[in-house]
Length: 312
Image 1 (cartoon, rainbow, N blue to C red):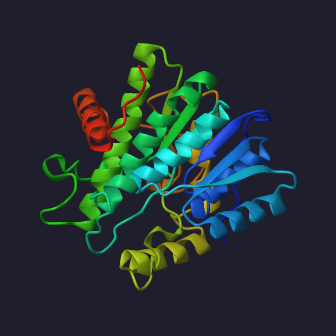
Image 2: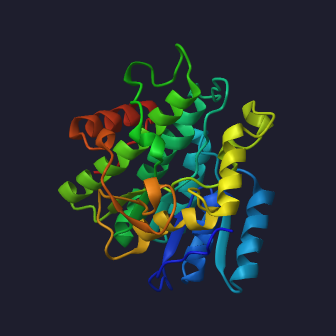
Image 3: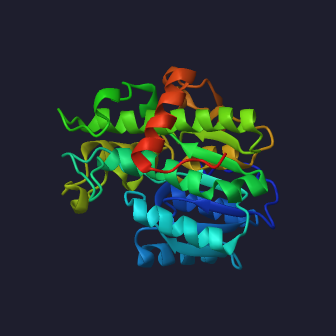
């Protein structure tokens, strides 16, 4: 059986945090750990019923947890704008934002109503636009923004000439491209915050490998059955071999977002064998995320594709 893991988390009483993808898996466990530390957690979700059920699970573990379930579909620019407008009207600063939600390797190319390849918009563009729109609230709190990447961000490259994968769609290549893109954005956010005095600390996290629903059966994405990969990961996780649990995998993002030792522009992930599981620690930044030229390039492309810019 896998061992239960935890890390010290500072008292977050009075802090407000937002966690995307908090209705299940790693995101649910991130939200639960922040709530247990006293944070008020905003849980933006696509499925209201699923989000309400997730919030109830957290309250059962942490009576009195302060949670808000809000609507958000990261693949829809209109939904991103609507959530941001709601929070801006509230006017309450955001101390922590964790860009965690994602989709992984739909077997066939899927395009949103706005014409974006699903992995590109969900994993990267949606988070770019949300962070940009919420930047006044983040700057007001001198927030910590943590972006979840993946070991796939250390593979392949950004498909610069065809970000939407209109030619020769490859599920794994599109996934890696989207995760490198959002990682480049996170590092560039750190650079620009430092340069312009925004006060935002932007860190990166990678969760290792755990048995989440990313590779499970999802008919809405064209995946009728669980993949072989997720079956293997579940078996390894049950035995505590190589793979972690959704709870342990959440700790890297929690550490990156809350630890006083976590530094902007740095990557945090599991410290175990092959960095696939274990307690979080700093890791070398993936070479694909280090280029300042690529960081500027993805930032400018993202502004153009989303029509959203960070306020000066």
